[in-house]
Length: 282
Ligand code: KIV
Image 1 (cartoon, rainbow, N blue to C red):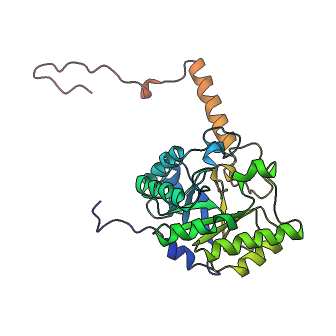
Image 2 (cartoon, helix red, strand yellow; image 1 turned 180 degrees about the vertical axis):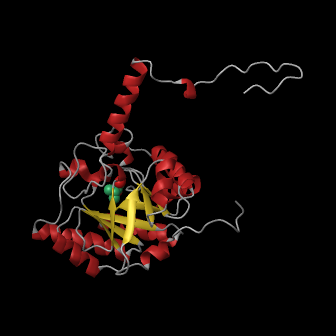
Image 3 (tube, protein in one colour; image 1 turned 90 degrees about the vertical axis):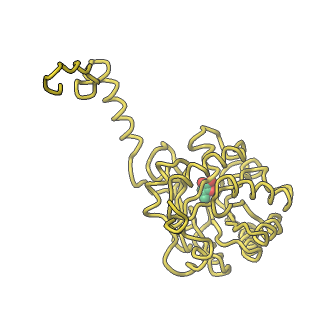
């Protein structure tokens, strides 16, 4: 594909301009074939650090590395052509300060060619968001339930249930917004808090377990496809892919054991040698 015929991807300013307009459709992606399927329907694909649990069988996102994010970011960029691709900065890659965050974010951008990074943000990370945005790296914030804080929180818990916590989440949102985040993921908060946050910030809010009050929605793709037994209350299952895979694998195993697979149509035959002056063998 020449640079003149390249299909234009959705950009950070285009997502930002959707504030209060048509809802922004987002899903997570980790592999090229799945990204290719999602690309026709989504505005934004997030290479989430949920890859740790979804693909690598980790208990949470804390063990996810920069190398894992880069590898999956490259795969998603190969699969999707139109949607904006955002790669999560993993735990430990941005908290030490703006300089470290810039070096790691720039590495993600250079090695994957993605268009933006996401950080789990609070007032402590606001200066880092500003530092990255000022140096050419669009940043998506992530507030409310922050999965990388699982060890501080003692689990994955909805946020904003007390007045003090509501004020803290609102402050996280304002800090990310004022620092220049082009969009803000709002996870695990009650509807009235999501409404208040969405009204308080200029960036579009992308909800996950944060009600329809947000400017867009995101889900972990494997959750909405039904690949996991347990999913949070806010996930709607659009398919039962686990049952589909289980039934297909059971049928394959039964066919192999009964010698029904492979059949003649799935088997290479020996080519008969051509007889001089004779017809082409079929
Ligand atoms: O890592 C992830 O998949 C995420 C989404 C849940 C927003 O951060």
